[in-house]
Length: 240
Image (cartoon, rainbow, N blue to C red; front, top):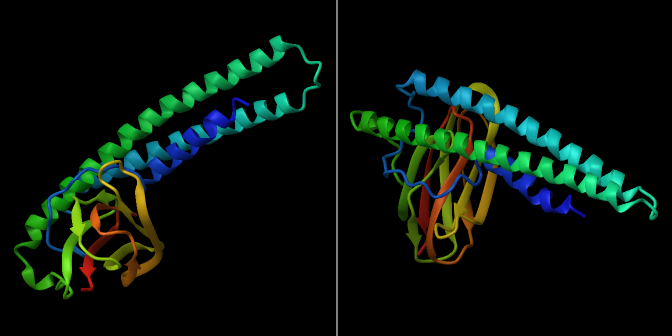
C-alpha cells in the first residue's frame, strides 16, 4: 500500500526536529563552560521562536500522517469489487499528502539548521568569555582525549578514539525548570548515522554521570540533544 512509503519520512522528520540527527556541523573546540549564562538574550529569543515554529510544523506532520492512515484504512476496508478509479483517487490523495509532508520536512531542516548555527555561535562566545575565568573551568579527567562544551542542542567537531570501550563522562547544569532529558549520540561523520546513543533524565542544578561506549575505534562526532537552558561539558576518556 502507498501508506508504507510515507511512514519512514514521517518518523525521520520528527527525529530531525528533535535534534537527534542534526548532522555533522563542526564547532571549534572549547574549554568547558558549564553553568555560564549566555551573553545573547536575542539569540535565546530567536531559538525559542524557532522551537515554537518547529512544534507547529510537527503538529502539521502528525495531522497529515493521521490523514494518510485514515485513507489507508479506507482502502483496506473496501470490498474486493471496488472499482479501480476509487482506489486511484485514494492513492492520489495519499501521494498529495506525502508531498506536503516532504515540504514540511524541508522547512524543519532549515529551522533546525538555524538552531544549530545559533547554538554554535553562543558556544564560541561563551568559550571566549570563559577564558577570562579559568578557575571555574572543570578539570578534564585523566585519559581525556576530547572535550566538548556547550548548551542546548549542538554537534561537535570529529574526534578519534584508538581503543574500545571508552568512557563518556559528562556534567550538566539545568536552570529554570525542574527536569529534562539529556541525550548524547555518537555519530559516524562520513554518513551522519548513529553509532550509539545514550540518554539521561537530569534535574535542576548540577548533574553528572558516565557510561561506557563499545563502538569500534575510529573517528566520530557527538550530537547533544537537550533544552536550551542546560549547559554541559562532555569528556571522551580512553581507558588504556
